[in-house]
Length: 185
Image (cartoon, rainbow, N blue to C red; front, side):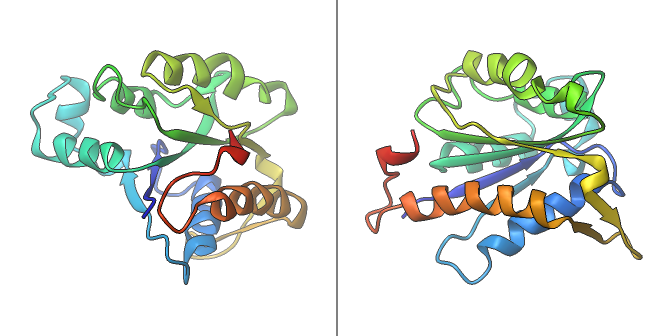
C-alpha cells in the first residue's frame, strides 16, 4: 500500500498555512490512505539547529519519509523562498532521502510575485536530495485563506478546487498494489 507523509515547514502555530494543511488532511480522511505527519516545528529545536542526525525524533521523522511513496511538502513563503524551519529539517534527511519518491509541494504566499518560489527555490533543494519526480505543486495566496476563530481557517473555493484537483490526481493514481501510476509523473 502506498504511504503519504506530510511535511509541514510552518514555524508558527497560528498561520494560514494551517488552513491549507487541514484541508489536505481532511481530503484524505475516510480513504485507505493514512498519512504520516511531520510538523517540523514540533521537532526538537536543538536537533534542528545543531544538526543532530542521531536525535530520536529526527530518526523517527526520517523513517516516515523513507517508508513513504509520496511526500507532500507544505511551506509558507518568506523572502521569496520556503521557510528556514523546513530547510533545517531537509538538511537532516539522508543525501538521497527523496530518491524514488513523488513530491508534491504546496506553498502559501502574499503575492503572485512569489509564485515561482516552488520552481526556483524549493525544487533545487529537493532535487539535491535525490527527488526526480516533483509534481507541479499548488501556490495559494494569503488572501485566499480566511481566518476564523480558534485558529481555524477557510480556504476559498478557487484555491480549494486547485488543491483538490491535484490531490485527486495523486489519490486516483495510487494502484491497489500500492504503486504510484506513471500518469502523474
